[in-house]
Image (tube, rainbow, N blue to C red; front, side):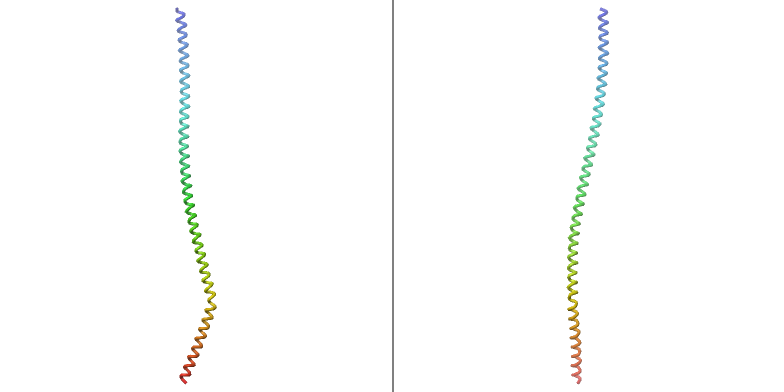
Length: 137
């Protein structure tokens, strides 16, 4: 019976050492998996942060684009107003030029009328002098 006991003890020692080795292997495998999970968790968190930054940058860019569009619209409005004012100024200048040309065209007639009036005045003065001379005589 001693041999059976020894064989049982050897068998038990062998099973115990196998169980210990298997337990050690399982612990190492669990540690590796836990490290992988932690690494994946960290990568996921970093990806989430990067995604949040990208979304924020996109929102900022969209906001800046809306601001630029508003500025562009305002500039186009100012340009249209300036173009209308320029057209009015051109029209006013053309009207003033036409008035000037019309006034220039009237100058010879006005000079002729002034000359006729001066001649008529001189004739009237001569007639007055003649009438006064007749009255004195």
